[in-house]
Length: 70
Image 1 (cartoon, helix red, strand yellow):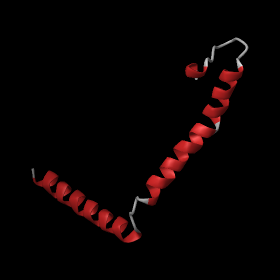
Image 2 (cartoon, helix red, strand yellow):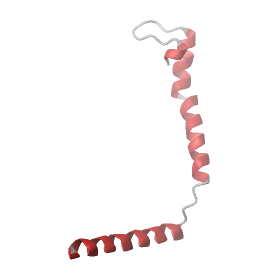
Image 3 (cartoon, rainbow, N blue to C red):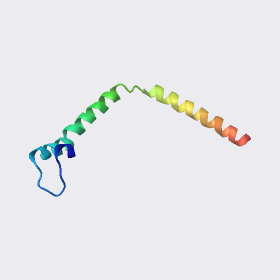
Image 4 (cartoon, rainbow, N blue to C red):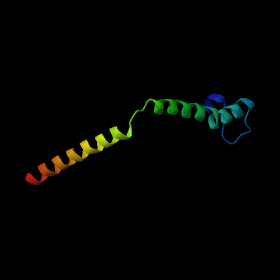
């Protein structure tokens, strides 16, 4: 907000007030829109999720077996 001329404990200019409003509304909305677009391309289906879980469980079993034999 310093880029908009914000100064603590003083009366704010119109430009600083605009910066405060943008920082609390428009900028987070833009960030949210970018995140939503990223999530649209994040294709982990239920089937892929189950496959990943199975692979991780197999790795854990393998590591546990190696730990007990050492």
